[in-house]
Image (tube, rainbow, N blue to C red; front, side, top):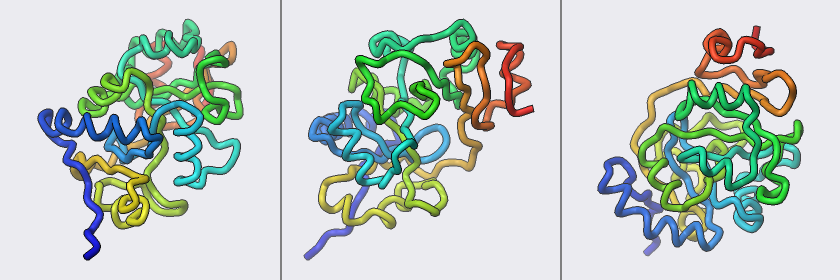
Length: 223
C-alpha cells in the first residue's frame, strides 16, 4: 500500500535537533530540501554544482535566473571570498539577521556559476529564522534558496502546500520537507545590489528604502 508523503516536524527546538541527522544525510546525497523561512517556504540544498543541478531540475529554473544563499553568520561570507563593500557592511550591520538580501561581488573560485545573477553578483541573506539558523550552522556552509512553489502558483505558506504540489518528488526521496507550521503572510525580502559604486534597490520588499537610507544615504532605486 502506498503511503502518503509526509513532512518532518521542524517547529520546536527539540524537533529541529531531531531532524538534523536525517536532513544532513539527505543534503549530502545532493537532495533538495523544502524548509520554512522568515517569509515563505523555500527550496534549497548545498552549494556544490551537483546539488545546484538537482535544485535547477526540480524547480525547472530557467537560465539567467539565479538562487540566493542563506547564511547563519557573516563568517560564511568570508569563507566564500565574497566582497562586503562599505555600503553592504553598513546595511548588514543594521538589518541582518532580517529580510534584506544583499547582492555581493567576488566568490569566483568558491561559488558555482549557476548561483551568480545577471549583474554578476551573489545574492545573500542572513536568515533570522531560528530553526534554519541552526540547520545552516550544522551544515557549516550556506543553503541555497528559492521559493517552494510551481511556476504560476502562489508561494507556499505551509508544508502541506508542498506535499500537495510535489508528491512524487517527496515519495521518491528526492525532496525532503521540513514542517515549520503555517507561516504568517509577509512581504518578501528587500534586495539591494551592492556590486556597483552606489547600492541600488532591485526588488522592493519588507524593509522600505527610506529606512535603508538611514544607514546608506546614497542608496538609489525604489523612489
